[in-house]
Length: 605
Image (cartoon, rainbow, N blue to C red; front, side, top):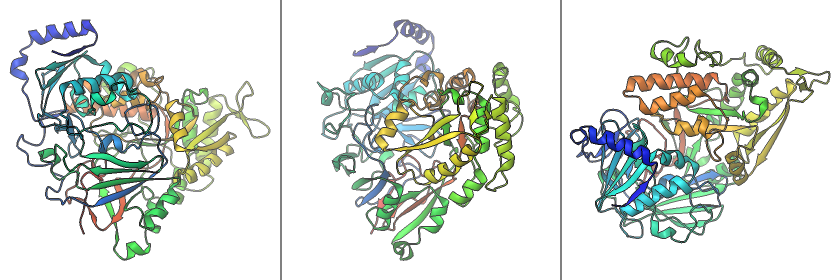
């Protein structure tokens, strides 16, 4: 039996629990696993409900991306890889159905087994599973992939691996992971980890970046060719091992996926209107209404599609890095929010069509309720009442303006809040503290930021009216990735999409342990015991009711923390595409999300 050992005491403790419990009667191999309850699809399901099982194979899609790349390994911290590769060129032991909050079905693994407490999980490999070079996927490959990603891969993998006490082979096709403590979500997270071929990395430094090594995986697409920094072409593997799996039926229909990279959003849009790209996601309602009237649209050669969804709004806006003492005081952060003239900016940039993000989980049942915290939410927050910021318990509402450029009422409030925090304007109008230091910072933007540049210009002018010394810095994509990974910024545009089943990723987004971890998503630098405790409760909630209440409590703490100046969200995706590209009539709950385009699309003449 091949085994990877983690902390021995944890293993012994869980071994004792395991032997004492009637686990044999509880644990049974299954075709899928859900965060709560049972998977929606039966063991003999023919295909996912949101696919076209009869979709034809063939054709191609050409997508655009602003930025560049210098790596083809999306699993490490170093370098900048096309983000799509993580999802298109690799697969895990199980696959996620985006029509359910968090449910997985067999992929490389034909079955999954857990005990009632979810203190361990066992996967059994599908004997047909193959890498793209035709070699079998083995237990050894799986164990190596988990350990390598957990120790040498991107920091997003490390926290999960640290919660695995023991990883071991069980027979020829089984892999069992025993956890340091019970965790309802951990079996699902492990099921999604990408599996790589161990033999490819013999004598190669996995953590080194570059384009000289294209990782071998088992997914339906492989990297066919690329031009460093400019384009990547994936081709569908005609010998893909899983093409007949129920989970894959109706997926991976296109023969070719091409990703083109551009210096800015304007160049990318021009490439689309010229026919060089075959699809374009539009994030501006204003542009959607005004710019998509070019000849190809009028002739019906390009179609405008709107894809609704049921997922949370997530958070998008200007994040304040609290590692900078300027933003340590919540009153300063509240002043920054008041200075953002949302109603005016939204009208200028986005026609005022999309609603503002009111909390991290708004637009879903997981979002905080208006007014005072009540019931179970209040109980969960009670232990931290003395340390919670104003608005957490009594309710927090974003300020609104009259829509005029002056935004006078909110600017007066911002001035008052800054004064309370020790900042006053001198005779020259420069905001200074008691030591005479100026309120000086920069807003970092990725080059070619499009609408964000216009939003930033309006916002920074408002901040200057308060006496702040604000500069706007634009850098290329590679530099931006390097600096945000190192938290080397004062303020920048921050986007975090959130799911209907938040879990361990919340630690990486705003957990205290991620504050000093390079590459973590805790860009705001928040360290809050209430947040940490609520995240841990998310992972141990025994039922959906407790889970929902915990998320609403977490939403209150995050929102009242004033870490981000929120922008807007849309309850639909706006996608323009050539008429030959089609998508299913039945849409998944997550809408246009990971796993939708190009995964479910097909090409039809």
